[in-house]
Image (cartoon, rainbow, N blue to C red; front, side, top):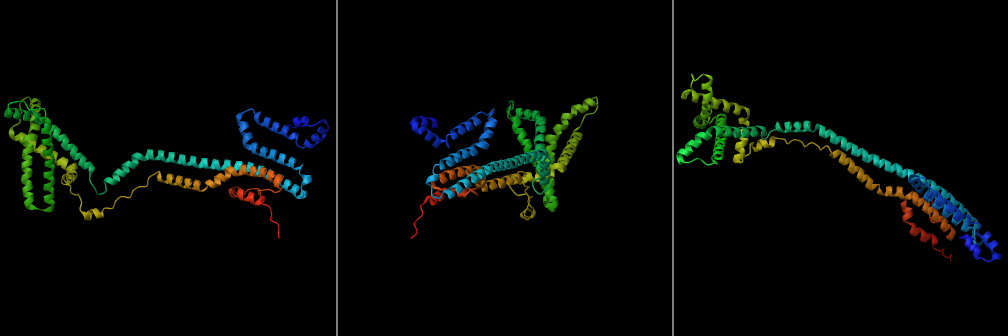
Length: 410
């Protein structure tokens, strides 16, 4: 650039132009050397490191060199030369300090980012550890909660489900044993084979009978507890009729089913009579009803009757005396609360993070701008180092204040 300008001047003026441009002619060569220094990097990592650590300081260096060398041409025409030179020297001092603060700011930002990454990683590890712990302890926790809730006042669901299952099972057994007899009776009555749906109807009928049998026992027990003697006599009679019906039509069929086996085992020498058959049926009914009643019937029948009648199982006074269990705190609540606190802190410190990221670069840019303004208006615009982004945000007001001409004193 300068060579072309020298060639364009007349021969008699070339020596003067060369002397005039001597303070500036080495700057383009220096800039070309800096460009080669950046792009002649052996790897992209080294190039990225050069850009991060040296790009802005070198741009400040180039701006400072240009402004300083150009200011040499203005010295003969300035009035306050000593003050101008002192400001230029202070600008160089501020530039060196800005470069130093730029490098310190980079390490500061790196430390802050690493600290946040450590906090997020710690939170993730904490959640993973708590999740694994809860998964490992889940069977014990569920067992403890179920045991705690089961032994508190309420519906005995295990007894209720066992009662329903037993009634369904007993209805299946009696349906299987009674199907041939009922089929013969219906065939004799209507003169044709019974339909396929007869088994389902028989099963539902027997299921209601078995459930009613448990309901009769519960009514008899309640009458004994309340000492209602008239009702006790009535329930004894009803229970005798229930026993007679179940023994004659259900349990007798069960005994008849095993009669061939008894005869086979005794070599056809022992055959059950009507008395012995009915006695076995009665003993079978009493034994089965007694075992099932004392095991789960006495606890499962009241919920069944309460469900059918839609009545509460406990009185309001008893309900008021029952204290509800305290809800256990969820395991993930504490880590999430910590994470919310850290997110809130991050939002509060977002301006500080922005300041950490931008202030090192703005320090260098402000130093370069000070060089240019010293060259143009003989006064800097920024007081370096910058203490915060507020000074940068007020640049327009500061620029207007600094460039506003002083009013003549009256």
